[in-house]
Image 1 (cartoon, helix red, strand yellow):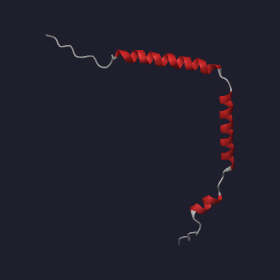
Image 2: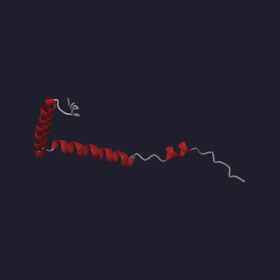
Image 3: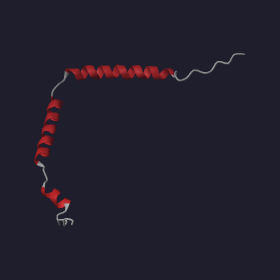
Image 4: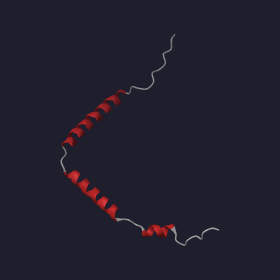
Length: 77
């Protein structure tokens, strides 16, 4: 013999078990920490920005050459 199915649905069981407390606390903490870090002056930001500019300038100088790829085949006469 088989057991009779219960009339409870899964959706009804999930609706009763909503946990919104910890998620709200975590998102509040995330936004507070993000605001705190943005307000602090970080001396590395200037160094990183300068390095980024130098790197992009290096890439642009290499891109201007237009060289690269597979070399053409040399035909012998």
